[in-house]
Every structure is written in structure tokens, then in C-alpha cells.
Amino acid sequence: MLAKRIIPCLDVDHGRVVKGKNFKNIKDVADPVELAKRYSAEGADELVFYDITASYEERDIFLNVVENVAKAIDIPFTIGGGVKSVDDFRKILLAGADKVSVNSSAVINPALITDAARRFGNQCVVLSIDAMSDDKGSWEVYVKGGRENTHINAIEWAKRGQKLGAGEICMNSMDTDGVKTGFDIELLKSLNSVLTIPVIASGGAGTMQHFAHALIEGCADAALAASVFHYNEIDIRQLKKYLQERHISVRL
Amino acid sequence: MIGIIDYKIGNLANVKNAVQKLGYEAVISDEIDVLNKCASLILPGVGAFEDGIKALHEYKMVDFLNNWVNSGKYLLGICLGMQLLFDKSFENGIWDGLGYIKGDIVVFETKLKVPHMGWNNLVLNKNDDIAKGINPGDYVYFVHSYYAKTADFNDVILYSEYEVPFPAVVRKGNVIGMQFHPEKSSDVGRILLKNYLEMSKC
Image 1 (cartoon, each protein chain N blue to C red):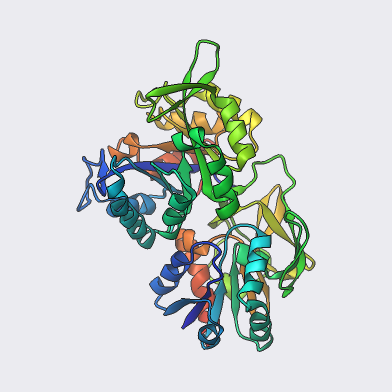
Image 2 (image 1 turned 180 degrees about the vertical axis):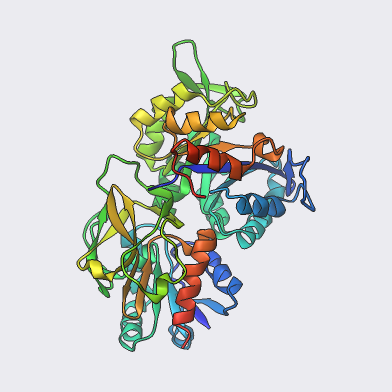
């Protein structure tokens, strides 16, 4: 049976992990490679790295990180942040990543999804969406790190992304992101009822129960979180045991 | 030396890393002279079947691989590389494969999500050296929308289930295929890759 996936997410700036302090038993807490190894050993099913470096010149530092991570771990990982072209895809995939996630750039240029999917396969194109609830009981797509409302309906955008060739949708709820009150179950349910590709739930993880909700009630195929793992609030192994006890299929 | 066939389909460095970590020397090459000197070969690959088979022809690999396989030397296909070992694929048209293993590549017709993406567990169909050390329920990492419908289920060593049972590891003599990514499947992937490298050593 296909297991539900648990995915820690790491923000990388200038080749270092941001929000990476408070780690025990780890030599260099801000080293993405060390952290990747640790999460991998703890049973993470995949990893996601976001390049939050602002300047274009520093892209090479990040690609170097991608190469080193690929050498160090043997689980799949996704790279996102600032991906604008098919050539960006190519560089990241050649550095050893398995998937590439696009967000704002795909809203501006939806053909990027199709072009990348044709060139490298649907499986490596992840459409990441930042969504916030509107006053009509639905959700709208935000871009530029959540600063700009596009007024595009998030469910419709996800459907279009699937049609354009995305192999997976990562849905980040801005309503719940960072507040640790649980994933947006309504958003996930709406999404899963219309999509035939896998959905990663993102934003809001605070407790182990939140993960169970996203994977059962929200029907998500995977759940992503950052701070609960970074700050050792939730141990991945314990989380997976917890989920297994609730009859959720996980890789242990 | 383990030869990794470079036909410009997907990232090969991860496979090379995985082989090297197991203590074997590996070379990525598109040159027949180089590959011909190797003890065994790996055919990786991601993407569409059409692109894969066309690229094999373009790099003049088909005759070379036919001779290689006929001479009894070992070949491991991974993911798309495994699918290419079969007779035919129905992915966006009908394409002839290498025909080393009898069967067709068909799409998952299911209400479940496609691509079949993530960790799924293995079930043993047949005892074989390639499956040595694998325990029932062990997980490996899959990413694919099409699967191999083998003509003879006896060619299936390990399988997995996604509404239907589908082959995870196939073997026809010296030709072996893995639908998942052993290089991305943590400890279990390492065991399976090691089994291949050990059995194809001499």
C-alpha cells in the first residue's frame, strides 16, 4: 500500500538553513547537508529545500548545496525558490534533485509547467500554491512570497496546473501557516475532490494530530512542515508511529 | 567497473553515487567502447517511453545492448530503464521496446492518484538472489504513471500493489528491472542495488 509521506521543509539562505537553531546532537546546525542527513535518518520520506536567497548571483551557492545534499542522502528531494525557466529546472535536476517546485513564476508564465513537464516528465514538476481564504468561502492565490493577491481561485489554479502537466500540488495555506493550529482541512478536501494528482498539505502543523487530520480528513497524500521539526517539537519517528497506530499507512 | 548508460535521459549522477557508495567503481558513458569493457551495465532513465527509446536508437545503443544481453552479461534497468526492457509501451502511442522481457507497458487505470508517487511496500513473488535480504513489507520509492504488465508473472521477483499488483523487480536471466528508484530508496534500495552488483560481478 502506498504510504502517506512526511516531508520536512528547509529554507536555505546563503547556503545555510534559516530557522535551524536549537538542534541537539548535530555539529553544524545550519548546514543543510547535516540537517538533510539527520531528517533522512529519522525517517523523513522526502525533503523540500527552498532557496530564499534574494540575489541571482548567489544561485550557484545554492546549486552547490543541492549537489552536496544529493551526494549525502538517498531519499528524494524537491527544490524550490526562484525557479523561472526550463533552464533553471535543468540545472537543479542535473545537480541531483528529484523534483522542482514552481510558484509565482508559474502564475506569471503557466507555460513553464508544460515546457518543464514535456522536457523532464510530469513527475518532477511540483506546483506550489500559496492560498488564503476569501470572503466567498473559497481561496485565492497569492504570489511573491504571499505579498500579492492575484484574485485567482486556488482550486481552479490547481486544476489548471494539473492539466498543464504538474505531477503534484503543494498547497500552502496562508491562513494557517505559522500559527500551528492545524492544516486547512476544508481547503485540502476541496482540492482532493477535484484533482487526480497527489497533494501535499502545507501550513499549520503544530501537533501530531494535525498531521493525522490532514492525511485522513483532508485526504492529503503527504504533509509538509518546517518549524515543528526544526525545533524538535515533533520527532519524525514518533509521528510516524502515532500515525500508524491510527491506521494510516506510513513507512517505518 | 559498472557502466551507466548515458543517453541523456534524466539524472545519472545519483545512480553513480549510489554505486560508488557500495564500493564499486562506476562510469557514466555514451560510448560503446567504454561500456563494452564494463563488468555490468545499468540503464537508468526518467520521462516518457517515446523519448527513451528514441534516445537509445540515436545513441546506437540498441544493437549494442542486444549483443550485450545475448552474450549473457548483466543489465539492470531502473524506472523508465526497466520499462524499456519490455516488448511494447502504450504511453502516448505504441512504441517498441527492447523486448528482453515479455510484456507491455500500460497506464494505471485507477481512481487512485496518478502518478503513483511515493513509498510502497514490496511483496515477494519468487525467491531470487536479487531479492536477498528483503523482508515482506519493505518500502521503496516509486514515481511512475505506467507499469509493466508482464506476459509471464514468473518473471516477477517482487511486486507491489496500487489497486492492481504490479512488478517492482523483474528478472529474465541476466536482465533485471526495477520500477522504483533504488538510489532513492534508502536502506532497502541499497540492499537491492548491492544484490545486483554482487550477482553481476563476474
